Length: 132
Image 1 (cartoon, helix red, strand yellow):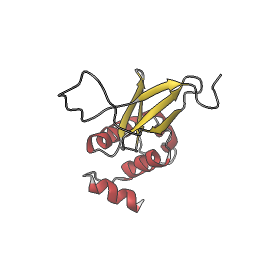
Image 2: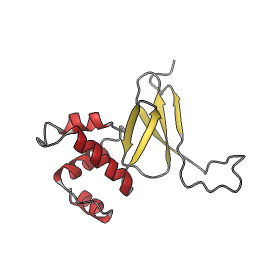
Image 3: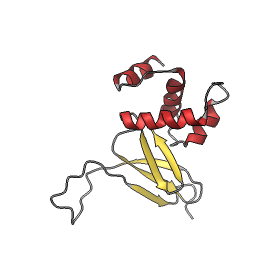
Image 4: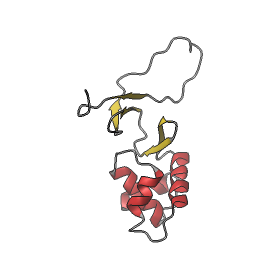
């Protein structure tokens, strides 16, 4: 937890008990959790935790660059502590979300002269286990 505390402080985030626990969960559980998932996992351990606290903490983490928002479905917002450039694959059967490496920069036609400073690569299909 000391490393997490230092990491959050380095990014201008005051490391409260709730923030440390939420970041620890996000970092250790690479399943791209939702606010509800994090709340249900941590609420039994932290009596004072609310869904609003989880939501506001994640919003702060994104603003400070220690987490990213993953939106593959319009009605589902997930979070990821891995802020490096990588893609996400969602299985249409089991609903699991998988990270994958982006080997080289995306090349696009029609954007000559544009400055791209962020991109998201999201794919959907069937994972190895669910593949028909």
